[in-house]
Amino acid sequence: MTIPDEDVTVATRKVTEQSGRWYKPGRCSICTRLIWFYPIALIEPVGAPEPRQEWILCKHCYAALLVEMRRSRFHSPMRLRIAIGLVAAERSPNAYPQNSPLREERQFQREFALFTWMLVIFAALHLVILAIVFAVPK
Image (cartoon, rainbow, N blue to C red; front, side):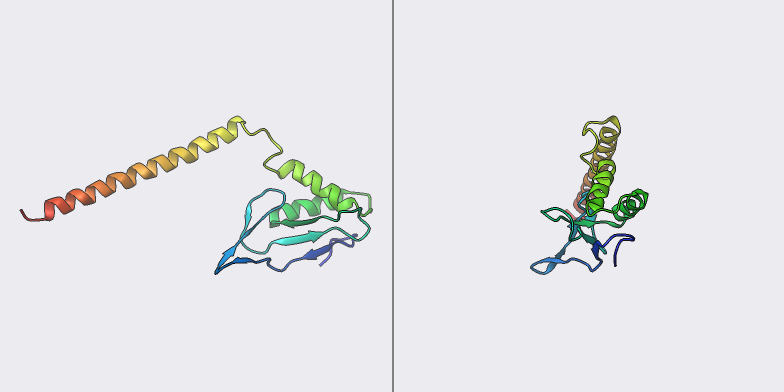
């Protein structure tokens, strides 16, 4: 499969990195999320300057890349690298400050949910222990 108007190689086979018996999923080169199914590997065209880059993208980043490629008027070998850079500037976790209020709020909500679940499990465990203690005849 090739990207329209460009001779970029796209490998759509699943890249499996076996370590022992377990499947180890890859990470998206842009958003760094785990790619469980159907990673898309892109290799720069032959005319691109050295070193030629290779990226593994998730479906969402690949769709954003295609939109950026269609917006470009230039048809040079550097087109893919520039489009990857533009998409990464929007979607990368390193593109925005780490301590933004929204990110801190999400992190607090995750930690609070974890704390709540641990409290519920702790209480349930104690109820089971008390039920066993009272059920055993003296």
